[in-house]
Image (tube, rainbow, N blue to C red; front, side, top):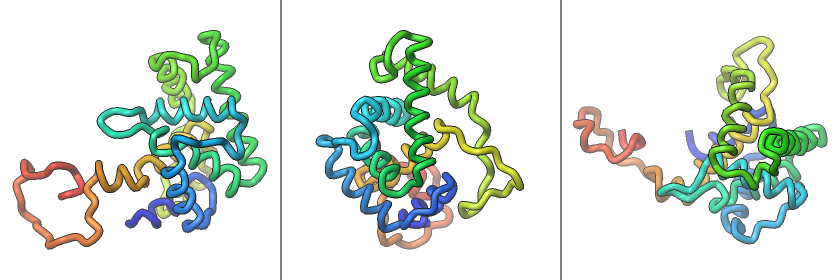
Length: 197
């Protein structure tokens, strides 16, 4: 499956039918403007919370974090340009509820919390969220799947944008635009990462 197919299938899984070219365009533009991002849909306060959520899900390690790759900008533009009003409202409400939880538990906005408290809130949301329905090619395999929670949607979009970014694809995953010969029986110790197998 190539990058274009992956993005299409992931967005179908999330319940959105998107034009793949538009999504790829959003990804490319977000990577280029990561440092100068001004939200087009979310308020500045919501954008700060969104950035804190995505950077908690994919923090900077030896690889860049979600914010460096423009993940919050991608989500902001995707929500503005491609989602219906009720889906847009769903994302705004989800961000608001995360801030309310942070205020109730720690008396601060989510973005102001130390990382361990941010992680605590997101782990709790993960535990409370219904399990993700099994899908095949973007279609649910269950007759009546549970709707995805805000946390599941934001995490899925964050991971999709992170792993399909050009920088991660070329510099941290094995990028092989034209695969070479197939080597079926090679010692496992020669592998530098899973994509070489």
